Image (cartoon, rainbow, N blue to C red):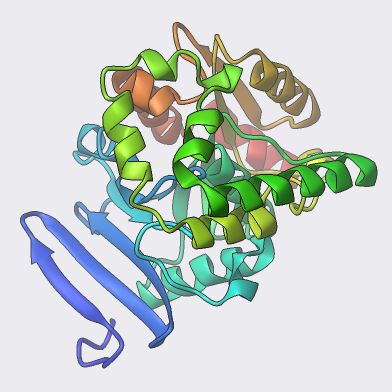
Length: 298
């Protein structure tokens, strides 16, 4: 159990939500929210770039009858405050595992969107005994070659500079990308943009520089030997990630791909109900996919 007298821990009760901020030190802390019955299977949600632990608020109520839902603010986002060296993918993964240890969570499922999906895949591959199943929404295993990664690092460094100099202009340009075209038509788009503006530009810039696709280790080769089930979700209007995820399925025997109609990159916002249905069906399915995982491990 967590010691409630820990001087670096704040505990607040808000309705059914149990909200805590856990600190490794006064200057290094991960913010999280957890809701639901702890005796139920636990699902850890990892948001995308510019997001926060609130990003899956439309999904969580649809799953609470069967799952306990844990959401965190990743480094550079929301209320989380960590040292700059903890922004890298390996160190962020260690922070998450340490948090689960503090919460006495030995195993859970993963749901990650975009940047959070890349991180979820890393966690699933690096700690297969901790993460039973993973749902990757609009995610990738990174870039295959060093030249691709170098070019992306340089691109992300320029984006980070732009973000720090004019956050509003950066945000407007960010959502002009083709993969967000259908998201721009969503009734809550402007509200979500305003929420994004609550983030700290200097911290988001660190996330781009240290947790961007160019800095991420390529996970393509490790997909071939992964043994725990993966569900890959992509929107039918997100052609770039359909291509990436089709290749992922070809490389990973325990992965399945679902293309969600009438959605783009941000499926969980554009169609929460179908997203939640896909998650529920996948996490409840202990049949063929689980038997395949066991057979492959023998």
